[in-house]
Length: 570
Image (cartoon, rainbow, N blue to C red):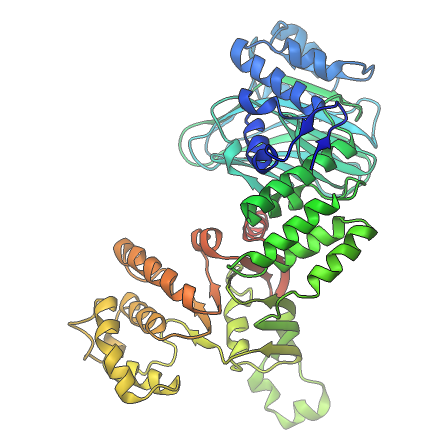
């Protein structure tokens, strides 16, 4: 395959497998990588490199302002601070600028604990349909602050477009680029054009999606301090315009770059990277190249750790009609799900004691409250599905429903095997000893007594309960209970396993040992569903993630997206 960008640069078959790495390093930017980018992106990345080398913003200013009559340079380190202040005051209240620290080398927006600073820009002519903001920024964060760049729509709520974290930049509330946090400056370009919101990092598009609001009245950089010490952004360059930026590549160039990156990800089998790019680059108006789409779908079929149906949907949605017809033959052989939930809804009486009254039952319909409402997803052989949400979201209720411990009010659950639910204290009787509880649970799971006795030594030793296994279970601490149940769960092979908050059992040493044992167990199981409040396991081991909120499914798919959406909600 030989592909040409609009500037005539070519990518050959030998370069193609490296394109994912090339683009990732170009976003830093790496001088050795930016030469492979198409011209619009390469020029911006090279100008950022020049600033890092010399501290001069001249090249960036000339490049971003080229052939634009409506661009405004609000601040750049090449002008005296007084001149920059005058330019800035045309767009923002003076009080807003006075909250920042002003110097010839740029603006510093810094906050300490419980402080808040807002740097705001309003368009003088009023609400606009097209807008752009370019910020050259460097973060110095000691802990997790709250720094966000937001659109200010004329009607409706502010929209968070970029979130700054100590180790990453988060775009559009769902795409976390950990590799972009460095001690050097990055050029952020936020553009509203032709009904789309576009975000570039050093000239490379990371977000291209349909705008969620109408005309804009401005943009604000919001900073809220937390913890000890000061967290700050240094900004030597601020430019605003009307959506005509030279930094913005044509949709065809952005779509071609996406196709090249996805082809590279498919060649490497890196479905996580492919999902991230598909999450960011939505509808550019130019279809995904058929060869790239088919390559990625084929890689998805070959992946041993679960089938990413959410990836399939994202690829097919971006293909043209010919591409979809070509994909249809391939997708006809997609695997069947091990578990399928369709419109699963659980309701209980709001006040069961009240509903016991005959007069109440005759006089009015029982008052119901929904614990789960319309949960839909498929899980495949090899999947590890994380389930997240705040307390009361319905996580444990969902697992209980899958083992028929909660009645369905509506919906269908299709499962190839009987799932096993394990949670702290589940099925354990306080008057029985730990040993007796292990034997009883094994019998419930269909094992014979001699089979459980053969496993007993391993279960007890792994749980580190040799001195306590013959004591009544009621006297076990929470950690001892969780360790015993985890050890029992991972000692008995099971095709479908449901774990409810069992992965935090014990001290750090036991957790490290438990993760190693769990990895071995997961390689043998067909499907695992895990309820977790912490994200380390979800991000490192889960193939999919379900985000619940008050019983409603908010998102199912890429664990990175699910966890970012959770952070935005809470």
